[in-house]
Image (cartoon, rainbow, N blue to C red):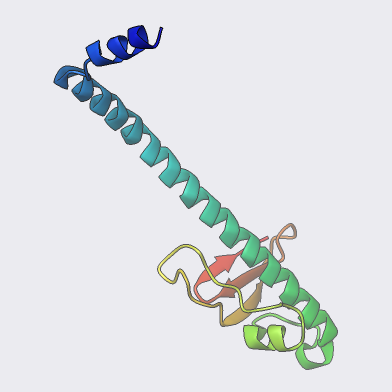
Length: 134
């Protein structure tokens, strides 16, 4: 029994060069298809992360302005808030960092609110280096 198995193993030969080339080509095709798909998925996830970050900052600024209405008054058009103030007063745990764009990896420093005529989106949040309209 063992002798037959050993003899069978000894008689087996490796893959031919053509077979190896075929495997390499197939792997290359799979990689060529997978890389763009993975890249676009990563890009989309970074965009979604930035949208969530911007929404969080927007909500923190709204709470900050409501709590400090005496400072801003009723007209908050052009109101400027430093993100360091939001962090220091507990509205944010830490300064948000952008994932995309020219300033990826930078902290958001200042947020400015500007009023709009559109009732559905009454405010535009313009912060270094992006703009967000709800």
